Length: 102
Image 1 (spheres, helix red, strand yellow):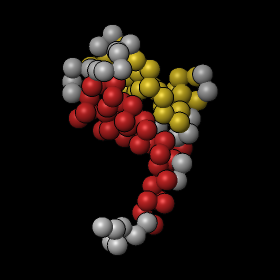
Image 2 (image 1 turned 180 degrees about the horizontal axis):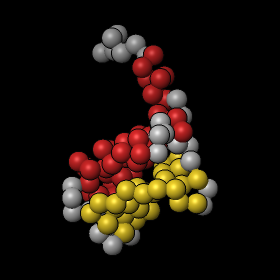
Image 3 (image 1 turned 45 degrees about the vertical axis):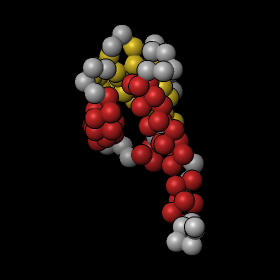
Image 4 (image 1 turned 120 degrees about the vertical axis):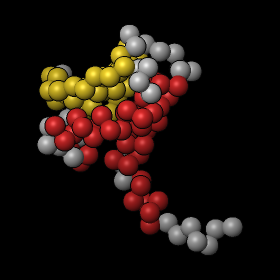
């Protein structure tokens, strides 16, 4: 399953998809401070569908905003963090000994 973060027409949607089929979505406005709303609504979407992060293969961002808009950048940062974690890199970072770095 995938989640699409769609930011279009001043509306943000978190869309849960299985292939091309939409299973569920959470909708909120872009003006509602996406930095405070994105993660809780992502979690809500997972809980409503009895899913965990392990069930999600990929997160995509679709937006009609330009690359310089903060809302889009926040959504892309969340996607990048998810994919980074999904690919096992977070565990590698946790296993790294930073205590000896200067």
